[in-house]
Length: 90
Image 1 (cartoon, one colour):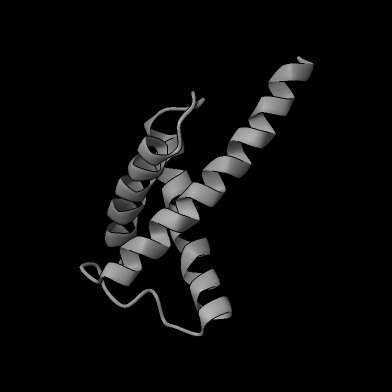
Image 2 (cartoon, helix red, strand yellow):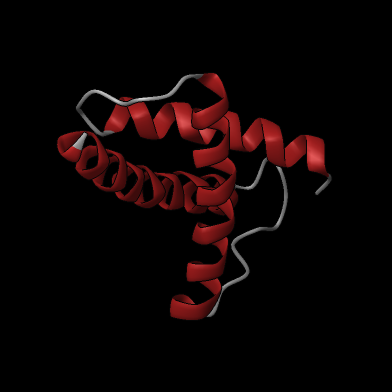
């Protein structure tokens, strides 16, 4: 997949992750896209390491979207934990 496809998947996976995980999120569209892209890469890597599957097959493949959304949720939770602590000390 090309970089444009990753950006599109990242944007949509980040939006879906924000919709699935309740709570207030700091950041706008750029942060959502970054969370999604990083989450997609993390999800694909975890799928390969843990389950031994190639979860990044193509844009319309269900495993690609599941991996991207699951990874985005993980990255979103980590992002909230990091930004929540820094705001609490400020």
